[in-house]
Image 1 (cartoon, rainbow, N blue to C red):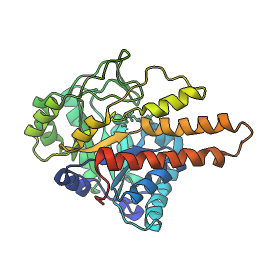
Image 2 (image 1 turned 30 degrees about the vertical axis):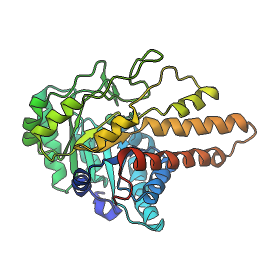
Image 3 (image 1 turned 120 degrees about the vertical axis):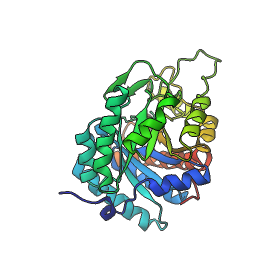
Length: 324
Ligand code: G3H
Ligand code: 13P
Ligand code: ZN
């Protein structure tokens, strides 16, 4: 049964991005797969009065179940109300790779979808993205497209090597497809291993020159940054101290994200940092309390850590706190 996102208490990303552009901050897009992650995102964003994009990958949708997700989203908007401050909440498909999955998300109450045709030849990316836009816009669902390829794994789209977005392509892409926002590749990548750096070396800076070129060609148009986890060293350390093995995990320095957030970048995607925080706290708890087997006992501190992490991001990195 088709449901409108409005019935779930959600909004699309149009107004969110307009305000983020004017206010020089970025809206957080936090990925979730389960109840505790969703609760933490809502609590952190209500407490910091931040707009938020609840982000679901294709894999997450398969994991959680499409029908469950619809009601989880409804639960999330009700929870936000109950917590006492109304914030704009969008439900967004992350890295949709076919027209069918995007359509299904629109039909199941998503307020925004990404069609990731970045691995396709330019004309094919345009054709696929346009098809999704034509469907989604009938229901006032916003669409994110992508140009340029991030290194690492983009869901099932594997990219061995990144290639930066070509600023000369962005105007044509946006005008021919009608997308509402554009993800670009300026040096970020997915996952916890973004760069190979030797001890003492710093990570290469993001290509702000490309971002500036894109902004010149698309004045006032919302840009999206994927792969924007900082891979918080304290969590990596905690994981490794309690039996994990994450060697050489490194992410994007917070100052660079802060700078990006003041530009046309209106949406910043963060998944890995949440995964690391959650896993770190669970590992720590189980190692210190080997007799415990009630999932609530170890999921509660993990959830609390997520709230802390997301509040920190909203306040100090994205600048989205107090903007709702
Ligand atoms: O960009 C990818 C996101 O981090 C989602 O990853 O496909 O493992 O859910 P996933
Ligand atoms: P991270 O792996 O850096 O958290 O990126 C997440 C992302 O881009 C989701 O689309
Ligand atoms: Zn991504």
